[in-house]
Image (cartoon, rainbow, N blue to C red; front, side, top):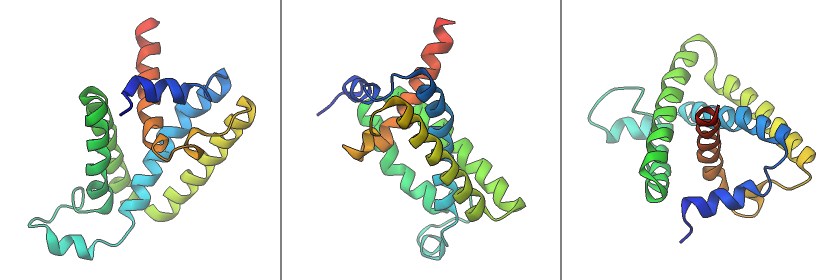
Length: 157
């Protein structure tokens, strides 16, 4: 089983270019945010019948699917899992707010598309393929790598 550092080291191989890194620091959280929004856009009739409470912040597909994702992070690092949980909670709340203002589905889809264009442009500059093409688990490693790198940079400044 790979350690968190093994994952980060392997992910970092295709994220050396400073411009690509900056693009990832913006686009990876945007993609995470937009996926939460897209998942929250899925009708919740099935979930509503399963859960004993009525809270749209909890009663949605994003929250349900975050559970196995968070278990993946906990297995690697409880500290990273906590950071992702905090960010995911902000994403759920912000997407619920956006959903009250406009179509959450279309807003999320536009953010998702723009952020992926940015990601692929960054990898074009890097000259290396995105890591997730090798292993889909890198789609979960990306957000953890971004948060770890952003916090590291803050400590060193």
